[in-house]
Image 1 (tube, rainbow, N blue to C red):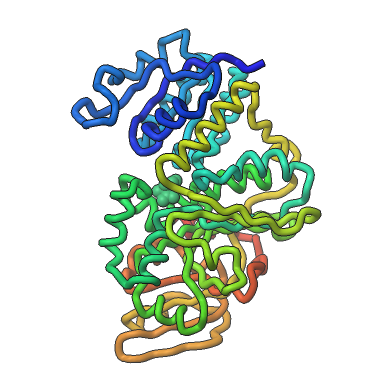
Image 2 (cartoon, rainbow, N blue to C red):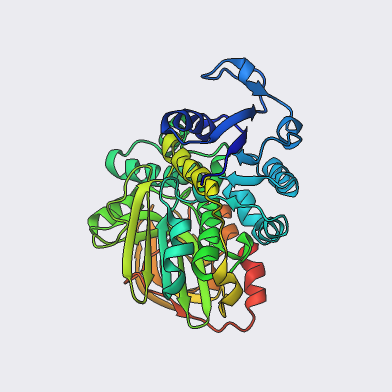
Length: 414
Ligand code: HSE
């Protein structure tokens, strides 16, 4: 028997308007949008103005509304809406990865306390049903790694930079026009969006909840045409990879550009497509690929959550209760750094250097570094410096000495 759902929808942007349309088309029984609340009174929208309200209380104080669908991009406002909705006993579906990543532990406790469902499949990799798969299908298998292309905007930019050589900013503007990019471009191009998604993936894959601050994110802002040229000459591509692996009793994670080989899951994932590859002891390696951004693909994941709530589905976080793993930020890895100013290559201390090249206006170095030598600040403060992981295989990491990992955490944040 399906529960009757009366929906209060927050947000009518790219995903909200997509949901409105596909919910009407899907023929989903017993689920209808009663009220839509948006922020901007003057924005022109595809349906008449009388459908919209501007005061969140209209939804939050309506006892008939039993499901709140939160599809706004302001993470702080979303946090208030979601926590208040749960405290009012309403189920919640959200796509707000930033809000979820920052408050996951608290939101799990809250939804348990008020015995409601809180689902967020659309927050990670758009149309790919990866959270529910990690939660249910891989619950009894021993997962060893999750690697993904989790940000459509950067994948779109990297694909077009490689294929067309158009300028970075022009391609970013196209991604904004197409509705892939976040309102604040830094979230996409500096790897924050992918990091929030990775943090959620780590929670459902390994049962480990860490804060986003503990996951290193290096973005693609500093990429140069010479880097793309270098990759092309070697038969490689550069992709923004979000990766998490189990090493002994630890889980490690990062978001960074990576040189990928032709046999990598990521090599032929282009434009706004996302992909996730999951490795587990018994099922071995599986790859999920689909559209990671855009109106209908993302709305399809929201629709699936709505449908699941009709059958009383909720995440149980069973791995969180039983895991023996901890999040460790310290490991060593092989990287590539390049700069238009050769002196900048000395900013990172390598434990082993394999290759260096230097010309008047381009220099690079490949070798092994201790992960603690890298930081988001180093990347942001040196626009000439492109930093990318350069793995020999997809399992490249060696766990470094975890003593002193708190110091390292502070460095990663710094
Ligand atoms: N800005 C995000 C992306 C939207 O490009 O992947 C989907 O989460």
